[in-house]
Image (cartoon, rainbow, N blue to C red; front, side, top):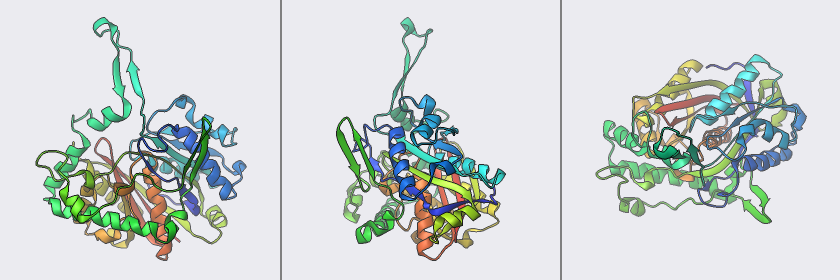
Length: 395
């Protein structure tokens, strides 16, 4: 899909810190988290709730009472007169939800959708499905997070298997994957420099009280340190494989958001700090059990829709659950690995499903602003051997 009107004010694009699962946010509903983070983000930016005319909510892990998710959240945000859809498309949720919000602006230049994407992989629900035909009427159960991480029902393959298949097809060696993981760690350190100066431009701390307990999260939690020696000492996740726990992401909890509008309003809101023009969104599906490849194809589709080539792109930010993803992308496109993820990525700071993409888009936009503007590409793979990508320009 190609966009003509849709834009973001750079300051009105935010993310919470990400917390490794079973950490500080493990007992916080993703809707409660979304309420607190979004309220604080809008207040800090001086946004009158009355200017928001619709809500797009993205979330992939069910929480209590999310039958009412979007209208419930809107009411809690002081926007009782609006509602909207709940979008769930695994790791592509941010891109799909952003696309839906952008489509509202494409159809009506006065539209100002609020996009909120929030997930908690910690303490995922155990679902019980009635099964009267089962022995003794015994129900079928599903652990929403763990069971779906374990295997794609279409192929029977775990996600780690898709990474190993892609690594084999790309003739990727263990050493080069370790080197790439270490590079991504070093790039993340750039975002932490000068007391996290880069991250503070878009990151909204989490501060709330639950059962008389104060929960405060100022920065990403649970990120392990990387070293060449430490990576080399890790065993492959599967026997005779090349992917280790150092070369793949970890589940996490977090929230992200954005105010979507047309260029005129984005300029007025930005206060001269920058405007993000959305150019195109592309999707793709790889061959069965080849998930990491889908991110590259989605990116190529998005660039074609925007009328651009990879040579026009200044930075790429990827959702890369495996280092394999980025190496495949670089080999297929010729894009330098050093110009991907200049301030970190989900490989390092974790993956709360839904909001991962929008945090990546925020980091891409701020990196482009720091570099003086230009064309950026966000892309990532998603469950079901799919991928989604966004092309944008920062002015």
